[in-house]
Amino acid sequence: MKKLMVAILSLLSVFLMTGCATQAALPTFSPEEKQIRNICDLATLKCYYHNVAKLHKDKGAGVTHLFEKERDYWIEYTGYAKIGVDMSQVTMSCDGSDITIHIPPAKVICVDVVDSTLTEDSYYVSKDGFINPNKITPADQSLAINNAQEEMKASAQSNTALLLNAQNRAKELIETYIQKLAEASGVAYHVTWVDIEGTAVVANEAP
Image (cartoon, rainbow, N blue to C red):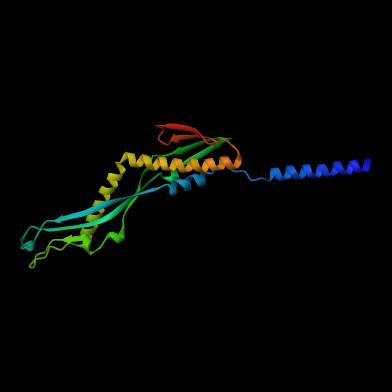
């Protein structure tokens, strides 16, 4: 009987040790700054604009420009602006279950043209003179489009509601990410948002 009890106790010890080892080997889930930055990249908004690039080219002065005509040129196209948070400026620090995320305001990241909207019908060019042409060069066309793109960028950058929406979208996706980690790890994370310019602080609990 004594030997049987020793054998049972030995088996229980093995089971307990195995259980502890298994529990210690369970994966841990905690927020990562790299993932936070990737989410900011995914949260970028793309806003489309109907745009018109215009150019008026005066006739030159002097004898060499006799019979030149003033020219008008424009292109209608669809352009877009990418609006989001600069992920390289997003930082995160963790102190146990307390998470602090510094995030900058959203801004216009880039503007571009939807190439498929540029067709033959997109262009208008006034007639040139026959005797002394006043040609509209590729450089003239590029200048017109660049100016139109800069105007589109300025319009998007001045839209504070749009910029705030882009920043809030990034925050919402990050909060969803942290909530999923909280559910997986059983840790109630406390998240504090800090405006990178120091103008606002917002805190909330992740379940």
